[in-house]
Image (cartoon, rainbow, N blue to C red):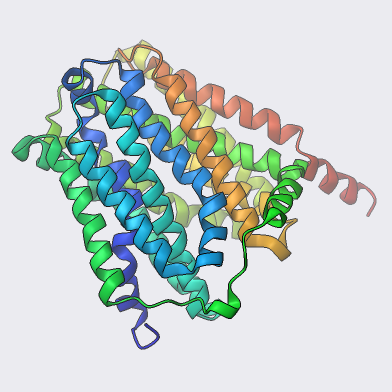
Length: 401
């Protein structure tokens, strides 16, 4: 693999990182159908999304250390098999309980392929080269919302809802082929580290840190704004506004553009104004987006513009908040940055998954539930920011200088 260019290597790993992004995004257009197909509630269908995100987050805590002990390739095989078998089982599901279980299996696979892909980059490339590769792979994940729902919508309309999961299973089988013929083991046996209680002691040290918990929670609340959009958008856009399923992805692409452009803008704001100002701006945009969504509804009832424009404002704020909060949360753990990153991802995804599930317990007959959810998430994040130990420490240091 060392003879491959960065672009070629990115293409080799693309099916592995796409497993998570596609597993979450391609399924979104058919969520309203699933309530009718399985004769169940939106909350239970939402669980197939929330559980996928939660397992992907929490799984990082275990799969990373397992790949350090058993090597990368065997974990790739196991993860690709889980993703393929889980997705194939989803297509064969006849009951919502079986669909939820199958989605959990595929989530384990998606998490494994994602984590090990980044571990392989760390094995093979220098620090500077790794930064480039991480950027390429994160870019591949980031562009998924711009076209995965479009693919999912057209597959469902043309070939039926099962075809969405057959497509995902195909990604898993393709990943198996790549693992067999193009990837070799990148972690030599002498370099492997046995998984033991020490890893859990490091996790405990991390989660016991108030600064980490505070800013990881803020990032999770901001991520919740995204995941709540995942949850409600098909019901609002397809069911309430009457947009055809196959066209839903084009509107969802707006969300993908927000992620991409918001990420670039966030980096520039941090560079120019600093982390604290970026967080304040993110909080302000989130609150403004939620308030605007409610105000727009009461002024003009339900409209597509009244849903998407405030969403763009709120999600842009969330992007600002996640990036800046991550920097503060991970700042105390330079010596164990990888372990801290896994803990950060688990907490971030876990909070977002819970937020999305709670939102779907309420009837989605307008944009009001989502607007209220945004305001509550932003208010909680603002409260944590005000009470932040890192912020207080910074002010104390400024006062003594």
